[in-house]
Image 1 (cartoon, rainbow, N blue to C red):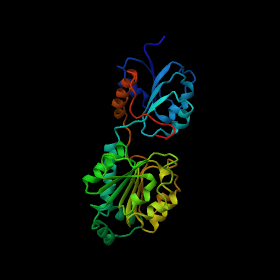
Image 2 (image 1 turned 90 degrees about the vertical axis):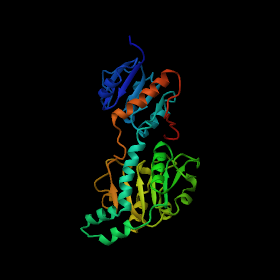
Image 3 (image 1 turned 60 degrees about the horizontal axis):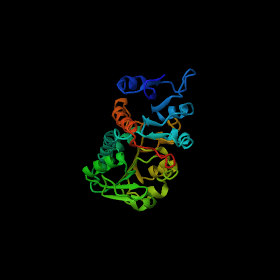
Image 4 (image 1 turned 90 degrees about the horizontal axis):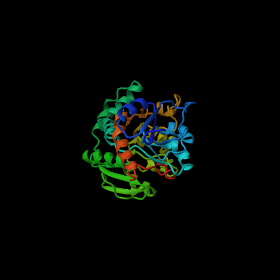
Amino acid sequence: MTKGPVLAIIDAEADRYADALADLPCEIRVYADAVVPPEADLRAVAYALAAPDRLATYLPFLPSLRWAQSTWAGVNPLLSALRARPEVAVSALKGPFGALMVRYMTFWLEGHEQGLLVALSAQRRGRWAHGAVRRQSAAPFRGTRAVVLGTGAIGAALGGALQARGYMAVGLNRGGTPAPGFQETWPIARRLEALAGASVVISVLPATPDTAGLLDEAALATLAPGALLMNVGRGSVLQRDAVLGALADGTLGAAVLDVFEEEPLPADHPFWTAPRCFVTPHISAPTEWRAVLPVFRENFERVRAGQPPSGLVDPERGY
């Protein structure tokens, strides 16, 4: 006999979440293992707070699951399993990432504007690039076009920050719907027009069939010479050879890449050694477990009251 609904917490930080949520009117069960423990009885679980990759493994053993809150922003590991379980609602984590992404963007954007990325790239080759750094730092970036692919909460935060720095912030989304943070928005189908002349391009797009390879050779060729490319969404949006070619011929002044189709990025991948290419290990907006709690609490109360939670995932769209 259980006391109230059963909430399963399926995450490496499950014990921390359970302690912080001990006041909830439900029975909490903790599953910190990546695989389902042999003794686990998950038949009564109605709700879950879970990492998507682990929930995908547990889902066949959760016949009564009604709703789950993801501890990640992206839910790609879970999509195929959700298509087979249409009665299960899942909320992606929304809210805590905008400010973190702005901080990451600002670091690299200032480095680009001041010529520091030129200096760091020259350091790898043991070169004293005084003149090149001076020329880069004198370039008039303010007032130029900065394009963000993706206009959700994260994209809007980036667009607002770019405007505050004096850029013309342009957003791309599925239908060209106006969005906060942007002076213009364009549909992705017209991406070449939207990207034309841009000095900064930032992708926060999810991985879907519609977004795969959007930043290809044709797209990169439209940019202003020496543009900065930043990818903090999903690696599949970039075409690898197009990025490498644009770095080699100077079309791109620098590429800052935080997400990849294969992670960890293999040691022999050409991004590691490409000129002016900077690789970070998927850390542009790290999820701190405490930031998940208010989002989960609000959504849990909404679900318990019969209201739709925020951040609901559409498995067919992929986000």
